[in-house]
Image (spheres, rainbow, N blue to C red):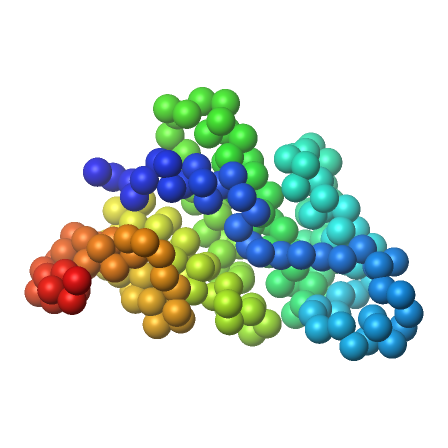
Length: 193
């Protein structure tokens, strides 16, 4: 088996997986509420269009979202801007893959487009801790699907250390360790079940 699970992949692709929620700039009732609200401080050029990009992605309107996300990537100057740009790019590329998968379920998917935004999200210092494990796991899946088992093992191990869990994650970690050549480590993980 070359991929983890087409059904699991389809489920991931069908949902907005970055967990990003941008509030429209006019949503804050007053300046005090806006300042007290936790979250990102975006530059004005990014803030002006980030909500539009998120809504277009949510509506699966790739033609509208693509130029807006590209505009955000170009305008991003702060760490928060860059994080939002990477999260929106990740969501957009996932949406494109989901649309392609729905159009032709048997066609192979080129998930490599997810690597760059995932790497940006993983290196961003303002990535929420709750999302870090999920991003590490997803990056591990990309490495696994391309046959880079030692790299996948590293990402899966980091995801586990970051608190990521799923129903069969421990089994997947054991399997990838065996495929990476760490048979003893994989079997030790299986013994913990």
